[in-house]
Length: 469
Image (cartoon, rainbow, N blue to C red; front, side):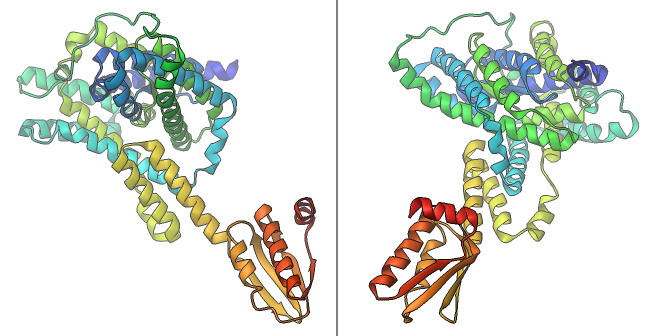
């Protein structure tokens, strides 16, 4: 109970101010994601509101910001184009069910299989992607657009040196928006991206036939959304753990993401997950507790319903300046040192993870391929088994498993003795392939008239050998 109280009310002032900054930053992102999917802006804005509010109660990482995201939007594009909004909402509900089940089975425990090189690739790719997604608001614009973005960026970095009571991004947004309104300079604004809703989301059931055909349509999308959403959320949670030097309950976070998406689908919102950019804004602005996430969601809805006429006048270059700061903060600049000092295989994995994510715009594909490559390099590294000959005794050194059996078998191609001993004192049998390889060698040599004696197994290897031979 004390811990929960601390998570909600242990950092009230900073959490609320940070949540206000994040609420502002969520609006242009949500509108952009709605455009990607091809839905009404309300679908993304309602999703950002409901997911943020719900996850503040049921999530496992205080201070994590979850809402509509680009990664999830990309998965939904073809479903929206082929079947319409009602199927998008149904897929969102099913996504929530799948994520909750996966969280219940401890899916977050798989996080330990993600190497540091893949984590670095994930973080760096996100930093680059955040930067790239801001460029359309700058490139081809007038000179004042660049000036406002640069001045905002300078303010965001300069203000904390002199004043820390109010988050620097919030001050920069208010100051630069005021200057734009007073001067009358022509800049692209939030209002140019889409119309704002004027009411709270209402509960309704997706208007779809409840039959097996519908399930066949939405299940593939829901599975993809579940994987992408959990992967991005759990990795973002890990990034915040490292930034704040605190721990989080990632299986609870997985279940929380499921609950949030399940409910969101009944309130007209698209599927979402953690937003690393907004989460970092929250942390950098002083947000640490659940109240910051709750405030972000509530303030988002307050902005678009009550202050919509004011919000639509906020210049996009100002928000771009804030997001460029986020991209620079997200990118791990120590990666250049990592590339010099780390083994070449790990450096290659990091670079390929970055490249794949940037090419596909899909975090799940990049991370999964990164993990597979790391696994292959690891297997190649540990599969170096050697067999040395000394006085009719063949000494095996190194782990014997599926990747090292070929070399082990080849080591006995030219045996000329009538009796040999194969010693496994410096080896370990790991799988059925290892036992099969030993049996194959023994059978092959005995057919040539060579008497073979096996010895030196440790207890676990001997148990495996006896069970499978």
